[in-house]
Length: 202
Image 1 (cartoon, helix red, strand yellow):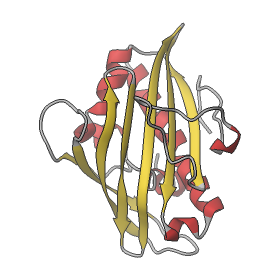
Image 2 (tube, one colour; image 1 turned 60 degrees about the horizontal axis):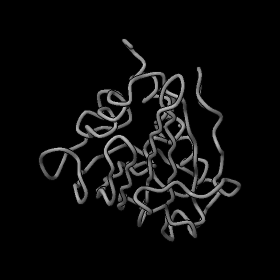
Image 3 (cartoon, rainbow, N blue to C red; image 1 turned 90 degrees about the horizontal axis):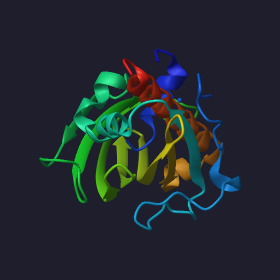
Image 4 (tube, rainbow, N blue to C red; image 1 turned 180 degrees about the horizontal axis):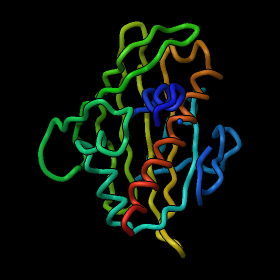
């Protein structure tokens, strides 16, 4: 978690391969099957920057769901998340909003900065799926919109957690391979941290 690349990658996804029992990732989503959905809504399938991956987590679904939806506690198990604040109260639900920050180091085309992300829950089905979207803004770096979908399916031996995300915006689309690489690293790390935290003390 302390490496520059992991910090860089988790900084960029809208909110870096998998280790120890994780299902093999689907790399860039271009060769993937039908996009993940939540209540019929998917990522922006026309966006040039998108990535999909999954992991088998050997923990109760209730614990995994609680970790993922208690957004104010993300910094306690995701080191690169500097802060996370709900902008409403009560259980996470449709139209809930949360603001979170994370560092992004310099790349060949952008300076080091702290991204300020405001996410809005668009769809949610308890214990089944989540879909949120929103912009990420930092000094010299911006993602106009990111759409992030999570699916949770109980299977033999645990819960299959699948996630897919896209980014859009002129700045990140100016270097699609680099942006896709960072997005992929970020999603892999997110799942790895979710898996490690959920499986602890199980």
